Image 1 (tube, rainbow, N blue to C red):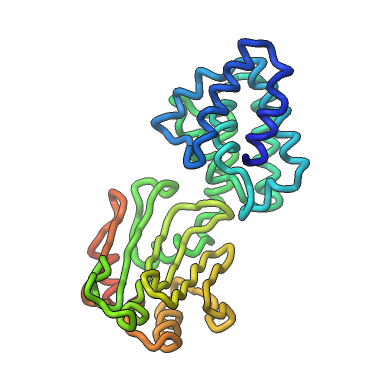
Image 2 (tube, rainbow, N blue to C red):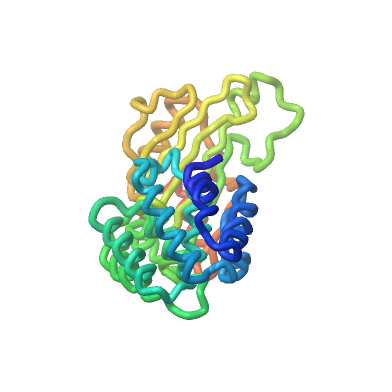
Length: 293
C-alpha cells in the first residue's frame, strides 16, 4: 500500500461515520494502482468534499509531507496525491485555499515538482480556482526559457494553448512502427527506435522526453533523457552528450555512431501533434535530421 493511501486508511477511524464512509469511497478508488483522476472522473470526487473531509485530508497531507517522500519523484504517491488534491480543489474552505497557495509558492521557490499536476487539476473545474493565477504567472515568466518553447519559436510554431500541447513522434531503423515478427534475434538486437515527445510543462518543468531503445531484443539497451534526468539500461549515460533541442542533430549523430545504427528519417514511423500545430513544419524538421534552417 502506498504511503499517503496508508495514512488515509490509518486515520479515518477518527472521523464521524458519514465522513469515514466518504474516505472509504476514496480508498476503494485508490486500491486500483492505475487510478489517476482526470477530467472525466474528477466530478465524482467532488461528492466527497465536505468540511470535515477537507480538514481530514489537509491533516493527512501534513503527515505525508513529514515522511520525506513528497519530493522524491521516483518514489512518491502521485496517485493518492492527485486524488486528494482533486477533492480539495472543490473546497471553498479558506484553509484549503491557503494550503494550495502555500504549496504552490513552495514549488516555485524550490523546485516546480507539482505545478503541472495542480494546474491540470484546477482546469478540471468549471470555474477558475483561486490559486491557479499564481501558476499562470509563473509559467508566463518561465515558458520562454524552457527548451521546447525555444524550439517552437525557431520552428515558427504557435500552439493554440501554450499550456496544453504536445508533439510526439517515433523513428526506427527500418521505418516501421511495429517490430516485424520475422526478425532474427540479431536483427532484433540492431533494430532501434527513437521516441520523442515535446510538450507543455510537466513535473519539474520537463518539456521534452527522448527515448532510444531496442526493447524487443534479448540484449536490451535503453536510455531516456529529460531535462530533469537520465535513465538507462545497459548503456553508459556518460557516453552521451547533453541534449540541446536547438542542436539535436549533434546528439542524434552521436547516438547513431555509438550504437552503429542509422534511423530512417524519410519514413517517419509515427507522428502526432495537437490541434493548431502545423504538422508539415514538424515533418520538415524531422526529415532534415533536426537541423534548423
